[in-house]
Length: 140
Image (cartoon, rainbow, N blue to C red; front, side, top):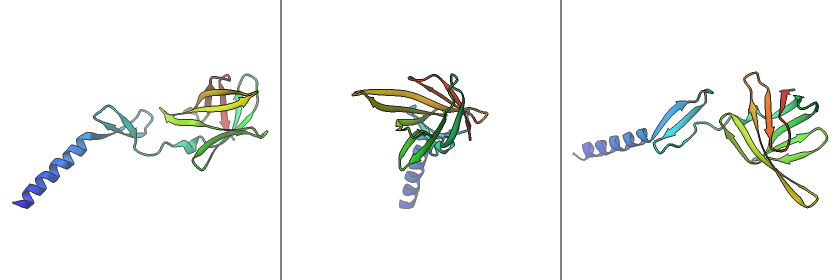
């Protein structure tokens, strides 16, 4: 009798957990968990490594530049070949885009830039931010 009660309770517990979380695929093909309270999360860590590497701008208001996006420890940085380097703050992977903030100081004033990088279907990287015009990059 104790075994039947234990098995019944175990089945109820398992069915409650199953109903609380469902698995789905996004239109981008990424696996996510859906919860009854309307929230969701990626089933796996976001594929941020696709963003890391050296990128050459080719559509950036006539400006030619190379940027490097890399991870050092738990931090993500963007740098240029000229030595300029800044850390992404509040970096989040949302809807197949890497959203970021950068903070810089100039003449005792703090400047905050918000922007995002989006990987395009053709493998290119599109950058939009609050301080610069939109740029498109090819991986080199």
